[in-house]
Image 1: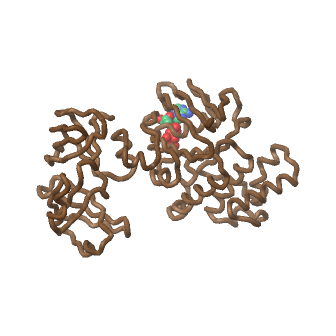
Image 2 (image 1 turned 90 degrees about the horizontal axis):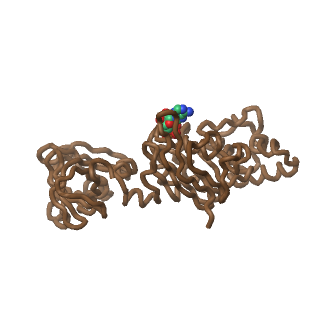
Image 3 (image 1 turned 90 degrees about the vertical axis):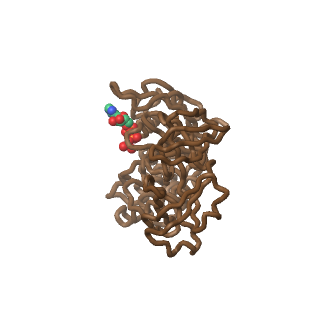
Length: 366
Ligand code: ATP
């Protein structure tokens, strides 16, 4: 199937700065593709090139198999939703949604029909005559999307559209945006520095760092099989230790951390050698906690520790466990069973995890 959007070897230089460094990806029709990365990594620069506000230094951008490099922004079959929605406050909701259609010279009855249809789709039928400031933040967000969608773009670009919303609304809008994308069956390209937004909504995520894509994959692939230390550290929470590899046997290995712990880990196909500096990442939920060491016999990493902090957060509660010599603080998910409900600071606990859950990477990068 022809992708809706293809970026081929995109490069953008600003003087001596390479903001986008040879990025290639394609987005299948009707899918939700996110570019996730820290501030300044080059996300917005990619979006601006796709929208036509910036010319690439080299590379190509194709929409439905046609290069758009020589097409001006207003003629490209893309639309962009920004963080600040910029609805027109003096217009009604219907006038806002119909704005682009009026500019395109569509007859009035057709505009009215399309606006009504869009209001249905965003779940706000019958509010066309209201003013912008009569809507909640979430409703305004949906109207802003409807305003773009009535123009029927091949690709909708969204630049951190939830950034200005409060936390609660942002959580709800993640679910709504995903539903809207499915309802309009349009390709979304979404940029964010918030990994949970990307994980919840996307079919595919590209993790970006210093102008380059580190990895493209589903949320699950990035979370469970990160290709680089950057992805392992950026997507989800991890305990992270640096050290030196002391043994390698097949996929398994042993690492002595700089603090002196001896841990078992896994290379998951990466080539790592004894004596090499490395980093190991272990998710808090991969670590089991028990009162009795015997329960953890089947794990190749085990230790007795002392609870130094309890971080109550409902179902996502965690504890921090310190190893006996006080060298490391290890973050562990607290099981949902009531058995550990009475756990107090200073309590002694046993923790253990499987070496296969310890993702190892060479210290320098990949
Ligand atoms: P944020 O999440 O903070 O918006 P970003 O990932 O979108 O960041 P970009 O805005 O694409 O990052 O910027 C990437 C790099 O390019 C940065 O180092 C930035 O300073 C630089 N840059 C962006 N636009 C220009 C410009 N017009 N002139 C010079 N440098 C620029």
